[in-house]
Image 1: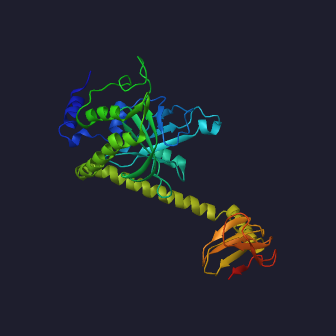
Image 2: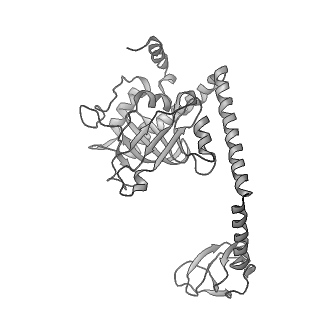
Image 3: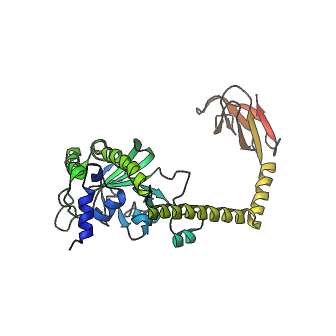
Length: 345
């Protein structure tokens, strides 16, 4: 039996065209099933033999009723490391997530598990994302913005109990309205053959319209959401938690830097720099390649005015091309300047 409050919420959610677009957490909560997801489109056509994604868990709620989604990308892979590799995804926004971001624990994992997850900042975090729309899971890569990304895979939800893994038979069945009703027709148009879909058509007809509408709603929704006192408290809690994690990571790093093990490694690295390496400076006006053989055995490229660290125990040559067989010019003799410098003029 549907509770009155839930009925009121459903009616309110379709009150206007702007309300028709749901955030990812709403879609996950109401429409997404755990289990194996069938790959129906692959950007590189490289995983036809791995036709499912499994172990999607929604049992660890994040603040504001969002989720942690864990995915095994290659559950049937021959290598055990690939079969058991878990990829974690977290909401990209505190109030209205449009995508879920791939990230992992950083610093003190035990502390994060106790007080809650904080999305890692910097590096490649956010490059890989997932989006659930209708009965499909879009796995994205090289994300720069909602208008600049690639679709790596498109997957279809688990099979229904009563039939094939088709648009009509995938469960749960829900009455679609507004924006999501139009998606069903767009998905059908994007089909390129039996059981498969076109990445280009799905991006143009399904994913991009969702990202455009959901991003606009995210901006509008947050302006109202943040005015409520309980939401301000939630945001402050997350900000404070992020500050705590930053402090914990810094303390962890400081403990390492002050440890005897770190000091020993530092001393050994200094010995290597002074006894095994030579710093090569390219003071010419051309890009060169450096190697340890006269027959174009290339090891590194040095731009004009740049430098590179090389092993000092071998003769070194420079070349004006990285093509095999290019003529090399000797500029350094083995063991002649370990811990010092060599110059290409």
